[in-house]
Image (cartoon, rainbow, N blue to C red; front, side, top):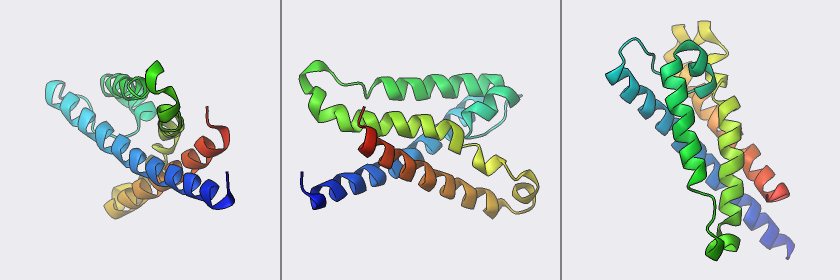
Length: 142
């Protein structure tokens, strides 16, 4: 593989991981809104690990949905080689999302006072998660 080909694969991994991280955030928010509609005492959030402790109903459903999203990327034997890279990106992005999604909640005072700080931290956490996941998927290619 040439150097420009390696850089191209790395850049595609990072870009797709950032995009997938934003998709995971949207899915987590959507799941928490749906759970809130059926179980009003729950909270709306996008951090499955935090929601698992603050509102277990939301956290459990979010983790189940993330697990299903991860399971559907596991390749079928016929297309194993084509989907191997996508599986690596999804695996590292989902694992990283569980931890990077806690970043917006790390500064509760600023987030309560300035809602734009929450959204800025949300965007930053997704970009950091995607960049790290893309590099790990490229280097480790599980």
